[in-house]
Every structure is written in structure tokens, then in C-alpha cells.
Length: 345
Ligand SMILES: C[S@@+](CC[C@H](N)C(=O)[O-])C[C@H]1O[C@@H](n2cnc3c(N)ncnc32)[C@H](O)[C@@H]1O
Image 1: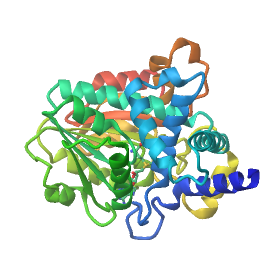
Image 2: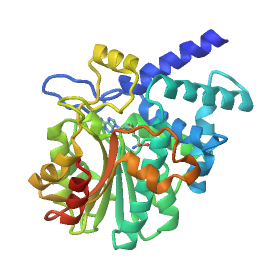
Image 3: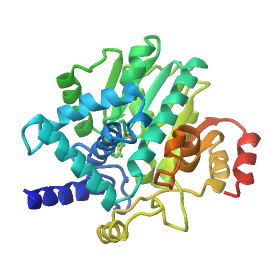
């Protein structure tokens, strides 16, 4: 049994990192090509579930995020190798602990913080007049479903790889979580540009100001793809904004989380399957302005910890290296830049 568990963890560990994600190949897109649902998406939702069940940290996961993720994860568990609900839950939690210990300590708390900040910004954006939200590479995230139930006047669209989206929709149906006003558009973005996807998506209304959310995805792209995403968002209705996470480039070509286990780096290097894009925070404003964008809001994981974690958990290990940014077409936001420069980033 122990051996089986370890074998399974190793298999999933290999899987979650990149087996289904973007592979480096000359002259071809870096998006995922596999016909299997994304394992990294599952890794993220398992992580949120793990924190929501943790004896110390569960209070850091807001109720709605915890309950929707729990329902979804419990449906995912039905396909677990171990039958029996309690045993299957324990097995999943054990596996998730092991995966975190072997990859990036504090990765799950980081994911919770990034989701909390994205959710807060989504609410603020809708309150300020945004009336369409497009989530790219949504994975098993539940934000669009929760927004759909709160804002019936706001259009919600998830665009994801067909294999991941099909698996997610089956789970949602199984868990009874489907929401009619949330539209799904399956597309392999390695085959199509976002512009053409938006043109073909029947639910997308090009006249609505739109919040585009790209969480945990840009690290699998290259600079050209990121620039092309920016120019597509810039061409959308007035008031449209982009909320995304990105990896910090710590030194040229290095985009890992701080504290990534050497085994992870070694294995990724061996497989030629490392994160492929990131940028130093101090270079971000200039990079954005080259595409006609300005930074409206920016937080590192450390800043999110200070702002969002309760006092009792300020000393908790949170993975560092992935930041969250809200950007909009327009000129430089000198206030944000001053903050970043003052911090010496
Ligand atoms: C790391 S997961 C992030 C999931 C989610 N955004 C979150 O943070 O919980 C990466 C997502 O990108 C999607 N993706 C990867 N390659 C894709 C492709 N070629 N076309 C469309 N989506 C793709 C995967 O299906 C998956 O949902």
C-alpha cells in the first residue's frame, strides 16, 4: 500500500508539473497540446482543498471558495484508486502534502492568496462597470461560477483546453454546480489566436468592457505569446482590463519559485519542460508600456501574505516568485511605479 502510494505520488508529481503542459519545440506554440485534462489544474484545486482542510490554515480559505472547491474535489476523488470516502480523502490529503514537500514548500498557501486577491479584484472590477469576465485556462477554478450566481447581469465565459473543460463540466454536472449563465468555450489555444477565439465564441460580446483573467498560465508561454495576449486585450471594448499572474525572472532565463527543490529543477531541466516566461517586477512597467498598457495594481506573494493572512499565520511558509498584476490600456500609472521602485524591485 505504501509503495503504491509512493508510486502514485511520483506519477502525479511528474504529471502535474508539465506532462500535459507546454512543450518546448521550435516554431510551435508553447500551449498544452495533450488530449488529457490538465494535471496542473488539478494540482491547484487539490492545493486549495488541502488548505481548506488543514487544521491550522483552513480559516485562510473563504467559505465559498472552500465549499465549491471541496464539492468539486470530492467528485474528482470518485475516480481515486482507493474506494471509500474517508480513506479517499485521507489519501488525497496525504498525496497533496507529499507533492508540496517535494516541489515548492508553501505553494498551496500561495495559491490561496493569489485566488483571494483575484477574486477581490474581480468584484471591484464588476462594481466599477465591467460587465463581462473571460477566464482563460480556467482549470478547476470556481470563480466564474461563483461570480455568475452573484452577478446575473455580468457575462461569464471560460475558455480552456477541450480536454480540461470537458472533465470540468462533467464534474460540475456530477456535483450539481453548473450555472446556466456561465458559458464554456473549449479551444486549444495552440491552434488559434485569442482574437479568432473571441470572434468565434457566440457568448462573447465585443461591445462589453471585459475583465480577462489569466491565472497560473503565463509561465507556460513565451514573450511573443504574452505580447500577443496584450495586444488582443488592447483591441477589446473600452474599459477592458487584464488580470494575470506571472513568474519573477530572478536571473536571465530563471523563473522558478524561490525554494524550489533541486530535484524539481533537475528533473524539469532533464525534461526540457521548465517554466518558459517570467519578468523581473522592475521591468514590468516598461514591458507593458511597449504594448500600450499600464500597471494598475501589483502584488508579490509576500505582500499578499502581509495583507491577507491572519496575524497568527504571518510566519507561515508561502511560496514566493509568482506575482499578480492588473493592467489596462493607457499610460503609465506613476503611483504604482513609484511603489515598485521604492521597494527596489
Ligand atoms: C496551471 S493550470 C491553471 C488553472 C487555473 N487558472 C488555476 O489557477 O486554478 C493551466 C491551465 O491552462 C490550460 N491550458 C494549457 N494549455 C492550453 C491550451 N493549449 N489551450 C487552452 N488551454 C490550455 C489548462 O487546461 C489549464 O486549465
